[in-house]
Length: 359
Image (tube, rainbow, N blue to C red):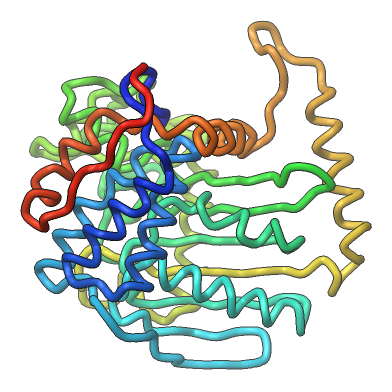
């Protein structure tokens, strides 16, 4: 559902990064923080995750303006061992913190086989898939998960009261060819997509929500009109115990390990983050790892497709194809994104990006 627009102008990725970077710097964010945030957001759009790319930038700018996202500084290291660290993110931008945590975890993994950094009090980290190739390009496997202790929109299986956020988890798995890139959530859909469809007066493609009485629905209005409904856990009314279990695991990996979460006072939109990197060389060996993962990739591609399916596709395959195509031909943004950024561009005195090609 988070697809690129089927029509409209294309914009060069470098120009979009420069535009986002300029807006963030003019808003007061330190230059290197702004550069990383801009790059991660545009990577999300390049991969087709249009609710978690530049669509987030107006909200980020608003958070900077009101002081809810720190403009400068560094995380505090709360605990440290050879293969594990806990950071207090001090409300710094999530993409910058996550990239720094990835670098530290990768160094620990290459020394110890595995490295883990958990971050409390980060701001929002954007699209999880946007980080994965930064590990797999180095032959490393990455696990990334986050939760937002300030939010609750997903009910536990069997309930109608919101307890969790969608709680995404992602993994980057190297092979001998393209990496396998997983990015899923413990709920059927996301808050971002539901809000976009609600604002557009549209419905979800399936009954991925439930109203306050527990009836399944595709109407996003149930999340915004009182009494409010909730996002269904992955698996829905039939098998939502699986999404519920996944949400609990992600809460333990993030809030539990970081020692900060839903049991604490709310601080506003943000994230508690789990970053883990594994170096196959510290286990059965890099070549052996790639031999196994490539066999699986080939077996899935060679599997006989069910009726109506052209071919089996691996997780991340479509996103990588979009990333390559849009890197070469320009990015087609969702039509709501640039209009939402126009007031900020005017306010901060930043020229909007120029289109490359008219579709």
